[in-house]
Structure formats: C-alpha cells, structure tokens
Image 1 (cartoon, helix red, strand yellow):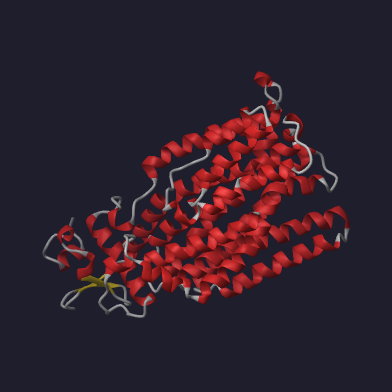
Image 2 (cartoon, rainbow, N blue to C red):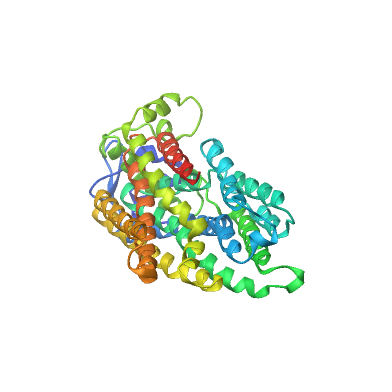
Length: 429
C-alpha cells in the first residue's frame, strides 16, 4: 500500500514495531532517531477513530443493554404480578433484588475481563420458575454471569482511545444502561399483552423474550468483541502503526515523559503477572479511595431507581401499564444529558465542572422527593433531575479516575476501574 508512511520508511510497515516510531505533538510520525518525520493526514486519523468506534463500541453497547435489561426487568415484572404469581410476601421481593448483588460485587475484581459471560439462560429461568426459591437461584446465577463486565468493558474501551477521546466513548457505552431503562419499560408494556398466551402470565413473558434476546447477542459477542489493541486486525498495516503510535504518545504524556521520551511499552501495557508494585501504588493513591466513595453514592441512586422506579411512578397514582410507560421519558432525558455532557467534557478536556453540575442536579431532585412538596407532577419531574444527574456523574467519575491514576500503566488503570466500580456496586446492598 503506497502511502506517506510507507514512503518515509523504506522497509515494510509490518516489519517495523511501534516502538521505532513516535507520534509527535505536531501530528506527525517520526523514527526514533529523528531522521524521518511524516505528517499524518487528519483524514487518516479520522478514519482510524471511526474504524475503532465501529469495531469496539457496538457489541459492548448491546451486551450492556441486554444485561442491564435482564438485571432490572424484575421491577417491571413486579408490578405486573410477579409477587402474586410466586406467592411472595413481606420483604421477599427486596431479597430477590438483593441476592443478585452478592456475587456481582464479590466477583467484580477477580473476574479478569470475562466479557462474554451473559445471563440469558438465568433470565429465561426467571420466566419459567414456579417458586420463590427458583427466582433466588436465577438471580444469583445472573449476578455471577454479569460480575466484572462493566469494569472490564471500561478497561477495554479505554485501551483503544486517548484520554480526551475516552469520556464520550465510555458514556456512549454506559448510556446502554440508560436506554435499557426506557427500553425495558416499553418492552414490558408490550410483552404483558401476551398475558395468557401459552399458559404463561404476562410477567413471565417479560423474562422469556428478554432472555432469548440476551442469548442471541451473547452468542454474537464471541465473534465480535475485539482483542487488545496490539492484537487487533481491523486496521491496514499503515493504520495500525499510526493507531498504536498515537496511543503510545498519549501514555508518554500521561506519565510525564513527553512525546520524545523513551517508553517501556511492554511494561506499561502488559496484563501479566509480577505487577504487584503497580497495584500497591494504586492502592496508596488517595484519588482511588475518593472516587470509590463518590461512585458509591452515585450507584446507590442508580441501583435504587433501576429496581424501584416503576413502583415509585405507580405510587404517584398511575396504573401498572402507565407506570412502565412513564419511566421512559425519564431515561431518555438522562440519555441526552449524559451524551451531551460527555461530548462537551472531551472537547473541553475537563471533568470537574460536569461532575459538579451532575451532583447539583441529582441533589436537587432528591430534595424535592424528600420534601414531598408540589404534588404528583413535581414529584415526577424530580425523577428527571435525580436520574439525569446520576447518569451524567457515573461515567464522568470512571473516566476521570482512569485519566489520573497509574501514570500510563494499563494494569493500574484496570485495577483502579474494577475497584471503583466494584466498591460502588456495594451501594446495591
């Protein structure tokens, strides 16, 4: 392939490692000895980013969408007759929601990026079970299957992008959880129309159809989830050289080495053993513990709304079907807020103002709900503030920590992300 890159380097690009090139701040590729420097066309860089977006994000987005629907559809099923159908009494529903979180939290960090485990069969089991005990078992299995997926996906996405490109991409991935809230309510509304078909109650059809959808997408994920950047195959040789070099330069800048410093790419980017020192350094970083606490608070709101928002809306005076439908606008507004602020955050290369704005929105919503003032309409509006602020804040916190911990070490960033999200998930208790 004839290109400016291959003209600058007489040898084949395939035989030249990325460590032999530098991605300079002026937008050029240079050899280590500085004898050759070739400007990179902006069009080529845009093409690389677009290819990355198309190969990395869609399958992870779909997996998170269906897994989050599976996790939260119990709230939709509850108001459609789940508790009556399984003869649940007292706090048994709360226990069924809670039991998912035990393996989900405990297995979050040691899951080692097993992205392809999905809870579709467990979701199907919830639709077929005839007892409360069967529901508990299915929820626990689902927690095992989903453990580690979100930090693992965040880790993988972050390894493909420069720091100021990461926020929007992670927020896009995370918006699957927001869209799942709206999609779950709408789908539940439609599926309950199957009430009585095949002898199954409407709430059972919610689990059955959504479980089948999860199984199909999980099967496709075996072939579509990308490997680490160094092993990806969807670039041409020239594109891959530029792609890896720009990531290398971003890591050097992150670690304070600048674009011209030498770098031990293998040390920074491997996930092999013998990196205990990196983990200990991460644990000693005050930022990790502060961001873990902040994420805990945000996740507490998100998890509460995921399982109980249909019940909250129904409590404002709406029917069960209306409650499922009226949750949709709340999630759609949150989706627009999350993506809009993520785009602005990457463009401005700053996180703090958006975290502050999100916290203010969520706190205002909580204050209105706590006061019980203004009647059903104001209470319903407060849901927009609370959930919108929360879903802006959560991805900002993950990316903000990832941008500022580990000094370019992939292991440190992965460990920090798992710790942050894993501890935050304890809020589900």
